[in-house]
Length: 170
Image 1 (cartoon, rainbow, N blue to C red):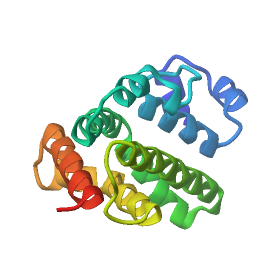
Image 2: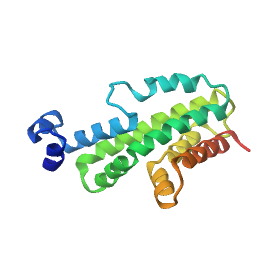
Image 3: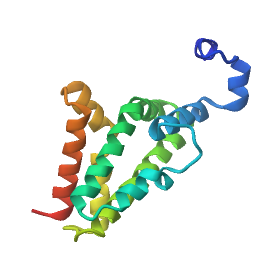
């Protein structure tokens, strides 16, 4: 942490005072990366939510969601994946990993409910949430964009198309 704090022009004691643990520092970095800023506004209370909620079709809704999801994944996927991996061997990071997964469930639930208000779901809500939760996995974004050479935009289109097909039927 010394090199990072020094490079940022912040003293190590200041960083340690603000972030009492490495987990809290990592959590703050992930929150800023996901949101794209350090404003204390919950994700589902941001202006883009109102814009997406104003859409009338599931296709429009999911296209809006995909756009926000891609931007967030580009900023945060590596940090989130690092937290998940570190939590496997450091029990102090397990609560952070669990919180990140729970947050993804909240967003997946919001997405499913948004689709369901625009058309009937082809499956029950719980399965639909699990489906979207999996499609949102940062590992999928990382593997497709890093390992398979997809552009982030291609991933976004794929996410929206898969969610539409899997949630609304043939």
